[in-house]
Image 1 (cartoon, rainbow, N blue to C red):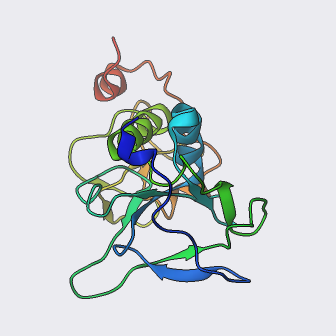
Image 2 (cartoon, one colour):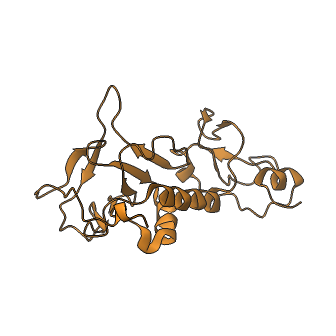
Length: 200
């Protein structure tokens, strides 16, 4: 890990008795990952992760250097950074909150655990994205539920008889949790295999 990320923190949470909304882009940017992707990425990073906040829904937030993740495009991942025309905030718990279920420090802030190396985090999240959702399709796809195009299509399984055999069905991130399980990646149709980059 780069020596810059092993230095003692130059920022610490202000004294507080509850979660405090702090502006992204001042001391750090934050990378927000949905629970499914975030948990897998955290396991991949292991001891190379910096401090991580977990909210009451299981969403994970890594702190990274300002501007280091602004061009990232991954499903179920958002970058909280300072915007030109508005402020973006992250709910930061007191440093002593290291247990859930409320928002807490999943990986506590401390010496050697402040910012996460951005490219190591990107690689872990990209690997988690592929493992959980398969190969990303080319271009936008229609959400099966709302019928609107999405830039973050997530493959889902719908009730039998409601979609064509061998056809991949997608949902946008807000609607993907409405389906009980993702479409298995063991489809045998040539179209599905080609789409997911598997041998036919």
